[in-house]
Amino acid sequence: MSFDALFSTSICYGNGAPQAGWTLALPITLPLAAILLLYVAGANRLWRRSGRGRRLRSRQAFQFAAGWAVLAFALVSPIHALGEHVFAAHMIEHELLMVVAAPLLVASRPTAAMMWALPVQLRQIFGAAGHANTLRAIWAFISRPVVATVLHGAAIWIWHLPALFEAALQQGFLHYAQHASFLGTGLLFWWVLLPRPGREHARGNAVMHLFFTSLHTGLLGALLVVSPKLWYPANAAGSDLWGLSPLEDQQLAGLIMWIPAGLIYGGAALLLVAFWIQTSSRRHQAPQELRIV
Image 1 (cartoon, rainbow, N blue to C red):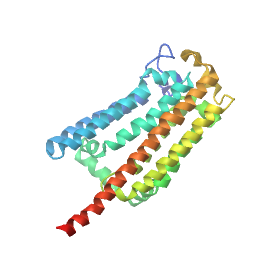
Image 2: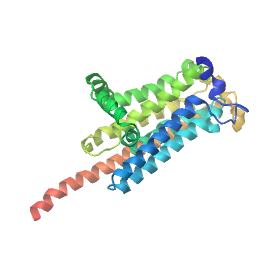
Image 3: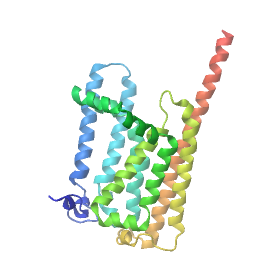
Image 4: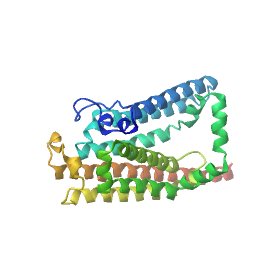
């Protein structure tokens, strides 16, 4: 099979009726299967070696399973095939990748479990690579909150440029690249901003970046809603499948980006504010209790 055939849109959207087919293309199913097998094998090995923290690891395993299931649903179920013909379905798929699957996978902290699935020699190689000065410098740069936020926002806005968006509909490789950039920058964004032990001081910064992302994605969604012109005519060819006109399809897609997705970014920011206040109150109470004693 040639490179172009492997990433062609016909394979990308499966066989049979394109409006409702399941996508079983190898560039999608193989990575999904590999990620799941690595996590299951590594988690089992890690759990057998340590009996401590089982409740925490159970919660993380549930988060990983939920995130992987959402990811698989977005990329394999008929919603993926419908996304070629219905813009609203395409938008649902994108938001599932960025604001549902990505934060769930990040919250599960799967890296340790997946590393434990590898042979010792490979773990040592990856460990040595992770300590290489060049890679550490690159990671230190892109994992800054402002850089992660800009990269995530840039991926969203650039891929929604009409010429690039419609090119991705016609060329399977670009379509895969679009989804990979949405998921990849989403994972980076949530990894940098979600709270982790030892990073309580960064919650205020994370709140600001989450609210900013909620605002600019909401702006893009609002522009889609109020625009009297079709941005992506090729993606509205099957809007009647959902009983919509092409312009109504675009408006529904804009609403999906504007309200549900914006609520997730904004809701995450509000949760961080609550955790921040709770942590600060505990920090102030501790010295008082010591003085009383």
